[in-house]
Image (tube, rainbow, N blue to C red; front, side, top):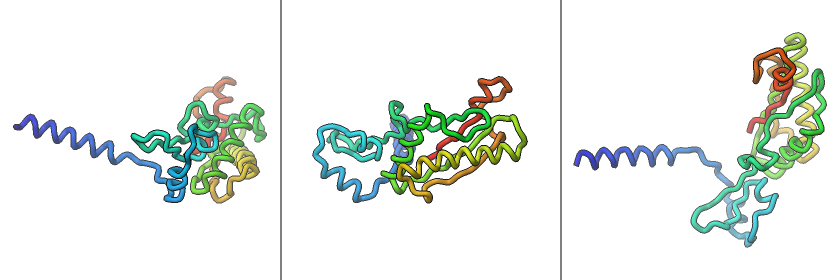
Length: 180
């Protein structure tokens, strides 16, 4: 009897801990429109906006491109060249996709965290980090995001992702991080 109680307590504890995991709550209108859809495949728009297609009758599957490693939205770091706030060609698609996602998901908020490498004064690097974040924000606004959805913070050189003074380390520290 003692072993059964112990096992039941452990199982109950596990169920409670898994049941308390945070979930993304969708508005009732979005849920109703997803149930009304009779699609036989998942479109890019559905995946990007997190709409449930109702394809799996056994569980409510919510596809969110933010969590899909194959999606451009999975990438949340935008890198910059030395002493520049211009978005590089290899990152512009990523920034645009985040802007489109915010446009389709008006309830989502992000913080753009601007960073710089260690070269330059502290004040200069704070200003450069802010300008980099503003450059990213401008592209997102063009894609339909609302300014109220985007917060900008500059950390300058204060939060390097990699320590070191070689070019590889410095390059990784010149960035804007998109935080949902």
